[in-house]
Amino acid sequence: MAIEIAIETPLQDDVRGLVKELNETLLELTPPEHCYHLTVEQMAGQDTTVFIARDNGIAVGCGALKRHGGAIGEVKRMYTRPSHRGQKIGASIVERVEALARQEGLKRLVLETGDRHPAAWTVYERAGFSRCGPVLDYPDSKWSVFYEKSL
Image 1 (cartoon, helix red, strand yellow):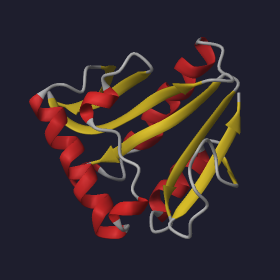
Image 2 (cartoon, helix red, strand yellow):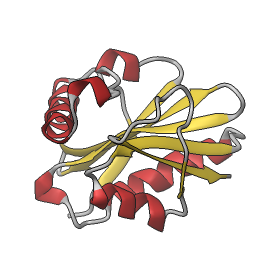
Image 3 (cartoon, one colour):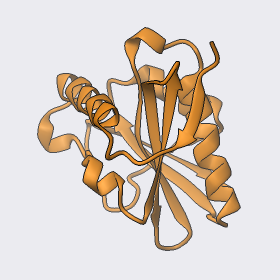
């Protein structure tokens, strides 16, 4: 069965559950004071578009584009359930985020991820992102890895 990815509201029970899993996973690897989570309510804001990956209607992955000033977009809330990893779901979501950012005329995509997330680094690097210094208002921290991509 093909995975379907669509723009959806995060204010759905199954998406809330997916985001809860994401938060729990991140907190296993990074101290809470160095986790920069958007809540589902923040994800539902006008400045953010959320993509949900579904397998037979079940939410299995997510990612979001958050818009900032200066024609900058931020990749946020990327997650694929362990049962569905290795199927390029994250790569597909990043492609959708980038396509939307280009369509809207954004000039640069940035993101912050953890220092213990090598699978995420692979997704971003394969998508053409390069490591960089701190972006937006994130502090420089040993727990963070930053990426950027010009569009």
